[in-house]
Length: 118
Image (cartoon, rainbow, N blue to C red; front, side, top):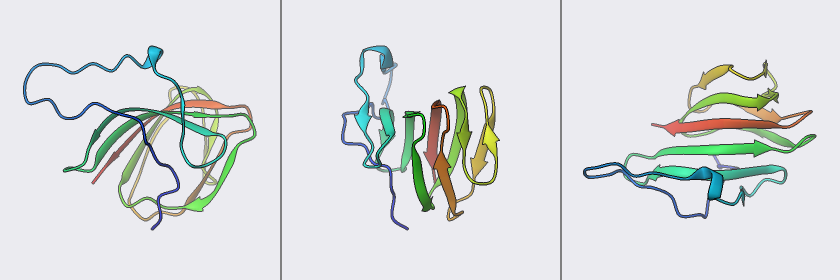
């Protein structure tokens, strides 16, 4: 499967001890590689494959059907998000198994927390 969303920004890694903090309010939105989908990558661990991102979907943006190699957890913070199976609003949570084909779109824009894990 080809990942359609990517991150090139610096992120936090797994702390050995103590607490690492990401100040997302001061981070710039970064292109994800898919038009209309922007990310603020908060945490990534190359060894485990875990990733935690904020994703902003611009109003009217859509991505073609795709699948991820990892479990995808979605928590909608603002707006609405449509994956071709359901439309999610603020407070809605979904977890998707690896390899499940889905689309990604938002009619009015959305802000979501995404967590990918193996």
